[in-house]
Length: 124
Figure 1: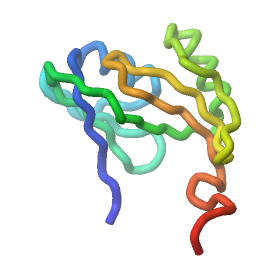
Figure 2: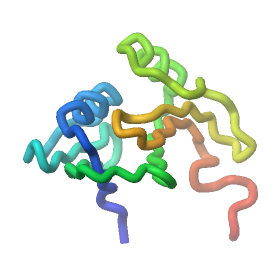
Figure 3: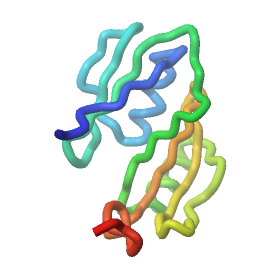
């Protein structure tokens, strides 16, 4: 089994498309104003948005990994994206920067290296 995509609700597809394109995702399906789908620049995963007038962002967190995290954050800030926190090392050995998309979904940009799937406490 492999994860194909994650889909989030959006109250403004056009605004969200611009945001996720600034993050580096490539728009591959455009059925605006109801649905869009992106391809991640690395790997095979995709990410999509569907229009909804009822957005509930509590408990929703999306993680995007980038090897050059600090440079990516700097570039995104130059484009006007606001961050809740700059990259910092977390106790679980990931460097994370936190921000919100236009609908308020929690986005974490991170760099974890080997600890992404193989932290020292991984079950054998």
